[in-house]
Amino acid sequence: MKYRWMHQAFGGLIGATALALIAFALWGCSAKPGIGEIAVQPTPQVEVGGKLSVSISIDSPPKGKRLRFVWNAKGNVPNENQLGGEYIAPNEPGHDTITCEVWSDSKPLAMRTTTVQVLALAAPQPPPVPQPQPQTS
Image (cartoon, rainbow, N blue to C red; front, side, top):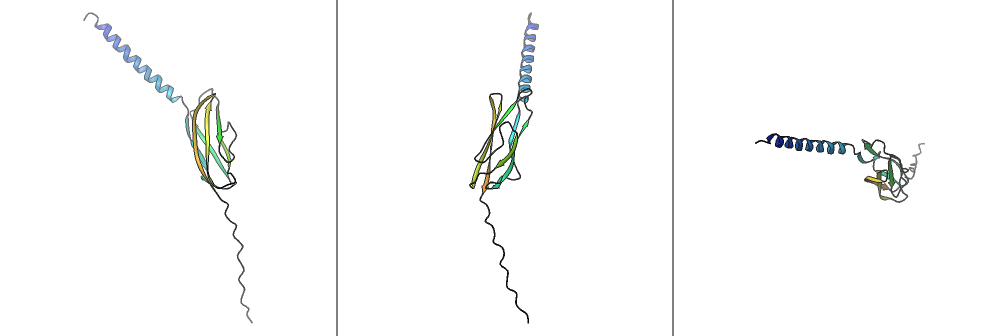
């Protein structure tokens, strides 16, 4: 085994290279932003024309890159480039799907959706009818 040292060195080089590739892959994965779900406050139910607060959470935003948020729904949603804001329900009851697309430069990173239930306005209750008082003599 005249060249045994070469075989051992080559095996060590392969092992070191494999470890370096694994470490690089793990480092690259941790650099990606964690994009959470759309949060709706106080609850995902609102009356026609009512308001809710909506937001999306971002963990580990990419350094040096600007994120863009594109909101969409039947009702009014936050402006583009905002992590969240005010949602105003449409004027008809039913379900409304709120979508937020998250972009970095010109590359889409994620799309999240949530559904809110838009309720019809509660009918106003008539005032109670006063009961006649018995007359006492």
